[in-house]
Length: 537
Image 1 (cartoon, rainbow, N blue to C red):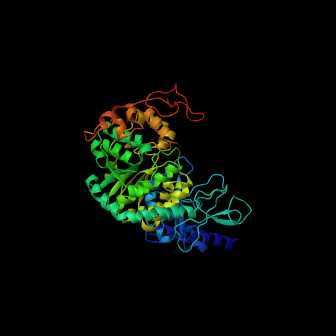
Image 2 (cartoon, rainbow, N blue to C red):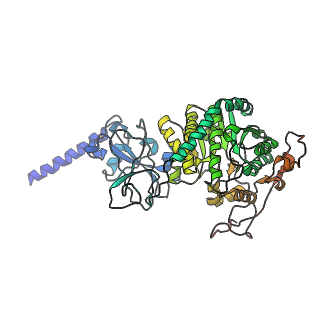
Image 3 (cartoon, rainbow, N blue to C red):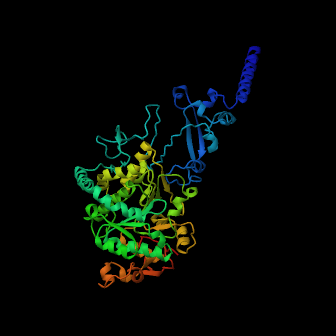
């Protein structure tokens, strides 16, 4: 009995002494083993863990990717793993001791990162109905995530009792692969495009250099667009809407890479600078794309690659934008204000479709700003070389995002996507998914917006209807689908801007088409376009 009492007393004394010694440790001390919370078999690469609020973490560290809010979503915390005892926060030992080490401690973001000299960030999510596991192993460093799925050989659909097989990031459990490699046909077609590009490079750049020098603003930026006759109404509406809002001085810095002479004449008739690169783009289709990914759409994607690569390669910053855009204010002012935009190499509008095809950036390739430097120069040269990916995937956007990921990892390219939950650069996601925001926008009560981009829209016909219904159509009907000669009725062009007066409206045309889409006025008497669509107003 006495021996037992002595043993109990000794244990009490020892544990008390240990706690006192623990409490006396200063900030330079290494946490004791009980605070490390991982077995010795992992001690060489994990010394402890903590939770940080996701919203706090991403406000402290701008990852560049679009980030959905965490609070109240079941995705509210970030799991931190510390690979050495010295990387642990100063408060770690006391936080762990406070609950006896029974839970993973929650620590404020700033404190949690205070002793981290470098930081690896892994982005992942639950893939829905798949029973996904994650393994972290101490090994030779990898900056890619290896994916495996139980399937046959070669991998196809998910087969639960099969062996694990290596799969691509785009492989789905249904067997579909969103990232199949380009075929020999795609590769050879790209060889042909590149051969032509290299053959004419010196002549094309010699012609382009003086134009860029004239068009660039005082910060060395050129606003780049490309267009064919089939999309010319959207280009003309862009120019007319900018004029209606008093932004004609900004239009002086727009350079349109016209892919046919008809578009060149229309653009110049509205005061836009043009460059007709007949050697590279002269064989582009004149008709508009009837649907996303059709032949005309894919061919015009090559024009988007060439025009950006040439301007960037010749040393200029650039804002690239599709023609289905209207300005509310000069978008360049956002990127010039680093208090707002930060210090990144390239900025994208968030596409909004956070699917595996566009992971992790979901960057919209129809509106982005590029600062010229060695990193962006090599990025767009690489995209040019990888034109076969665009042909294989019918998507300039998907190919660009794939290359962005590697260049961010290899070369430190700083990418920023302007998130879909923000209000400065709305587009198709906002149009179809954020009704409250669109109600403020169409009523002129959203002062933060710089542009609107009519993305997520099936074809040009719908784009025109949606713009008209929003009150963003400033092109007179008599100029729609016409050439310069048809508009001027064959008369001699005697003014510098022969199309501004006959084509540009001072006030927008407003027409109702669909009751379930954003509208300037109530369109409840119109039909719906979406199955089960509910009235916008």
